[in-house]
Length: 340
Image 1 (cartoon, one colour):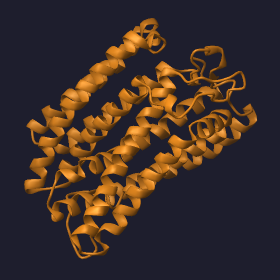
Image 2 (cartoon, rainbow, N blue to C red):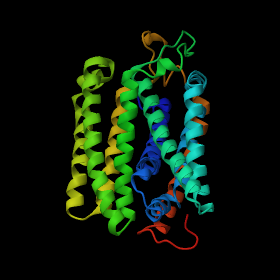
Image 3 (spheres, rainbow, N blue to C red):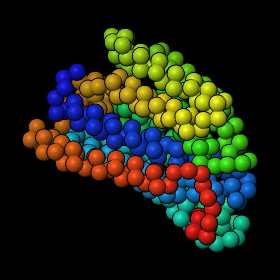
């Protein structure tokens, strides 16, 4: 690994998307669990648990997309043109869940609230699934021509391995969302969320083990990096320890530390994915020579240097804003007349 401008931007884009997965991941997880509770009051509590922060969390996705466009425009062009329908579905899902959060409590009728509850839940599950499928296709490889253009179809993106990554992502976000919900609620709903978190951990572990086996058997180019660099196994070990620490913290009654462990699990998973992929941005299969890398798909060194200066100013502002919002709205959810 050469620590040059291209690598710095690879790391920076990865940090931004990891921030999105860690923060908006629990939003999507809350949405995936939303219909499991039947009481209107409990559903309102879940919405208000993420209400002050969900839109700020999505800033990380927008910032990550902007960084990808600035640093690796060929990757951005290939992804947004070749995966157009999939990205359109992702955008529609994010829009529907956002509208559902704002519109649900505008009217008291049961059918009205149920309609937006379903929209919120389906939009959240579909968003998480599509994000995972996108990551799975990037890891597995997609058909690219000599110009780096995607030559496949939308159906071609829905192969078993990417779909398995998508389901694993849904399981991960459900676990993350249940833990966040337990941290923000009290009483009966808090106990439910703790139970859901434990079930989600089991679901995630089953998916993760299955995905690992599939990777070792069928995606040897991904596992090759760990095979050639045994130290990378330490990241996988850290991920397993973070997941194992969640029920341990629950047993001690420390919901906040369980959430920290869940965040650590996401960070280590994203780190392992990035290190396995480096230096590829979009792997080409069955013609690896057509792959888009951090070198053949990057902007000019001058552009990368100038954008790095801007990033050094902008990213700390985004981090400071995020920390400030979470500090202001810390603690358990309290319902009032301004609540959703």
